[in-house]
Image (cartoon, rainbow, N blue to C red; front, side, top):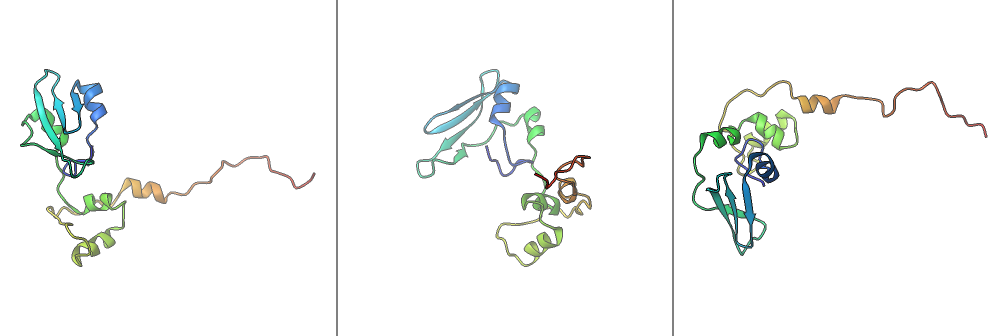
Length: 140
């Protein structure tokens, strides 16, 4: 499930059911999550106008055990850098400063991490095939 306020934006329904014992029930009008004990955790309504979206009814039950695993990240340059497919930081700053994107805000002034591992990995070059002592010949 896509949950924009979660740290990684995704909630794995399969992980909750397989590894945490939750029961998830989805029907035409609602989606409900129950704890392993059988008590409800939360229910989301599926509206008629948009069958691709479900909206939380009321609030979730506050449980520290589950809340620590689903914390929201502060909106800082690092988060926007990741959300924008690792776009360069100067470009992210320009988007913010010139307000090219609506809804893009910063809630944290944390300095961006100078080393982004996915960006470094993408810049690494490697040969498509390992070197070999055997070479193809044009002779027939």
